Length: 391
Figure 1 (tube, helix red, strand yellow):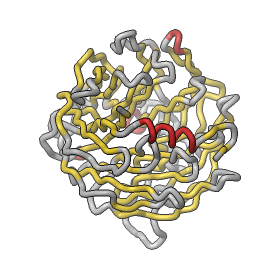
Figure 2 (cartoon, rainbow, N blue to C red):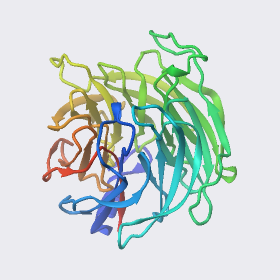
Figure 3 (cartoon, helix red, strand yellow):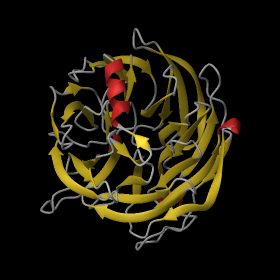
Figure 4 (cartoon, one colour):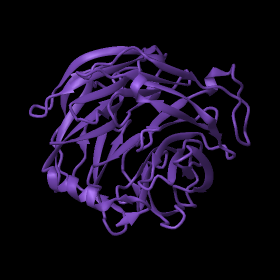
């Protein structure tokens, strides 16, 4: 199947044929209590997953690390990077950090390489560029985006680029100012497939920033225009690009939530706001706070996690204009699905329930994208992120 200039299904099919099993690394919260929940996690864990059945082994400790709340795999699959969202007991933020590890594909263990300051508070998201020469981090509590060079042996260098987000807030409920740092919250960083642009969401000021990347210098600079200020007060949290790069989707953290379509001019790096699709049934009256957003490798479906409703929303994508239709809100039977991940083949979705301390494997119907239980839940204290490594 072709969508735009991108061939989609053969890629997923090839990945599935090559990988008989996968390592899955789990990011967790180890400290902080409060909104992060209580538990006894020690850092990054791993399981093995059968590529054909989705069966997962019991999580084992891969490396001790403080609050590794988001993980990313280096393009060559030899290194793993984690943000360390440092918190004191009771929830007071400490200066954030970013850690580098090398992967032992046979044992699943991680070897610590180094750790550097994130240049902000509560780093919550990390991405690498497609060449593997730089990493970008979203600092949540201080509302900034930072970049770091990656050395030849996977080590992180000190930050080489930094941008402080500013108010005022865009949208109908604009109230924050540039001095009101409590309302500036960078939440995700996404690199475009052509490695030209970095997209950085800020829930506080209701904007999506666009930067031009320069991997040779491990740097980025504000684009022109430098951001899209959303007209609807949606609190954009996590952004996912469609394989055709014409569309992007962003989870709306503000209740009643939903998913916003963004039209993307990939040549000029310009975003345009589109319609919002509701992510829960119309008769649900409780508070909803969407978190994770992902596009299926086929480009036919979009998935979004609903905290509050404790479900995964399944949307069908209109192949003509990218608009979304809610097909399913799959109830997970746990509390606080902060994140989920699609395996490389697009056959499985793994949901992580932060407060329930469970990992829930789900099977994806290849025809309609809907979800069904794929196995028994696994127990892990405060799981919040997953990364797949084909082996």
